[in-house]
Length: 272
Image (cartoon, rainbow, N blue to C red; front, side):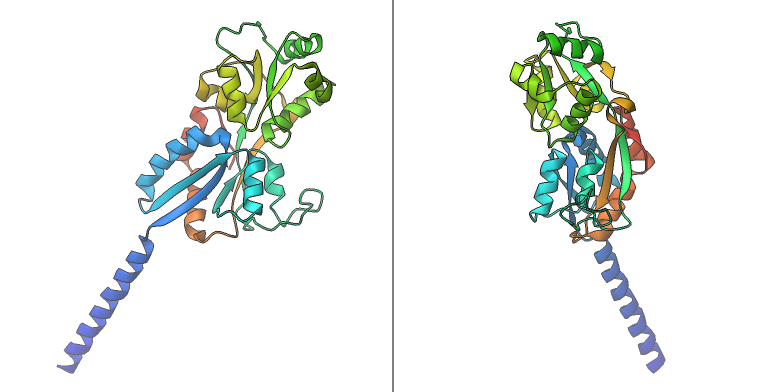
């Protein structure tokens, strides 16, 4: 009788522990993802897919320029996963980088989780009908020099703006002179630049190929690596996360076939 009671007790305890572990595994998790504005459409689509994979995880996105997101993280915002549109902003949060890349010696990246997730292209996009008949970066440069073209670009603290500045340097253009001449306008993130082009308030804009695709804009030229370098999107789990395992799982999903297919459908090139 004692053996039977002992066996029943063990079975009950095993069941209880198993139920507890299952409940722990299935607990509701809110995962906060800070991502470059150029990922808005793709990550929203991926959120729907991820619900099938991890129904207990709710993805909460914060889309903005990478510089703004980096500042928010630095100032104490809750964030589990950060995806930047350029290495610069990620480097500024990564303690493994030297003082040149991380001058404030910030430590937010969970070491061992950082990956180069995607590559994008820096595109010269025009409004519907291409009213100024701009067909290349060379033609854009000529129009800027003679004052016949109005260009939209990102601010200096926005990756797409920084890539544009590299293109200016490649063509030996002086941004300050262009601004004084009134031939460039600015956007605080790539979506604002894209909107200016879509609404035809400018003659063209330098944006990402993926944003041009999502907005239905015509791309007339794409910058080469020689002109502005590769457009790499790094991603990492942050060491301030309260949901490390869930954050790592989501980052792993972003590197998988299902998410990669979404990224590729709009023009990203998966790297991880």
